[in-house]
Length: 335
Ligand SMILES: [Mn+2]
Image (cartoon, rainbow, N blue to C red; front, top):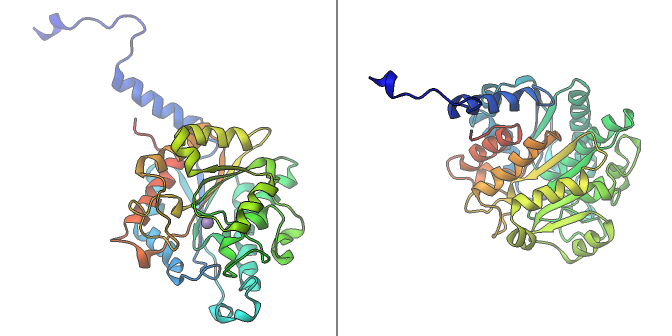
């Protein structure tokens, strides 16, 4: 009989299925919050590719809100940030930095929404749109922690440096400048958003995954004092180790880490739906693993997912991946 062949479990041994459930329950119970606010910012004025304005719609098609709720989170609000018309876009007369007043208007709205979400105890997730929206989201995070007299760290995942200024830019596109702006360099109308600068100290900022830099950006990375991790570093050490090092570099004495995730950090074979693809990026599992590690640290306070360009995507593949990456960042686990 089966009952005679079954040995009683030795004391202390756990059923692997039961212990797996316990692990998951433990992970959920130690989350910093069970609330999320989704901020959709279909901003395309920072780059030359209008398709990024369809990013929020593609993420809704991929059911980002429903999937976050299925993971056990409350989606408290879904905010659609209005974007001004793109008449500024053809204005090459001010090509040092195009569409600054319009991007500033969007940044103010994004920043206010992010700050309010943090004040309400939620994780704001800003879905772009091009990367210039991070000027706003990081300003909102900075304003929140400044009022509490606390610090935050910044991990910026990107194939590109996004650290140009009007003096170094080759295109005038502000989506190549938001990291510089957040560190206090560049157009003063942007750096002075909410009346203080810099938004983040360079010793609390890391740039991960870079492989396509302008010459001016190389100098700026050297001079800025941020901690860079190139794709060569990732080849050498692995992305798990590099993510640990990035968290250690920015995470001393902080109450949270803002993650600004440009989908172009992923290899275009895996994530084709981006505006400025660069070969040689993260593979599928690496992309998830970096965000899983951040989730396990429970340090991520806020997240940007940017540069999704559905006009270049294949059957919404990249939006589906971006949705799954958000779930990994929020703590979705294999077991
Ligand atoms: Mn970027």
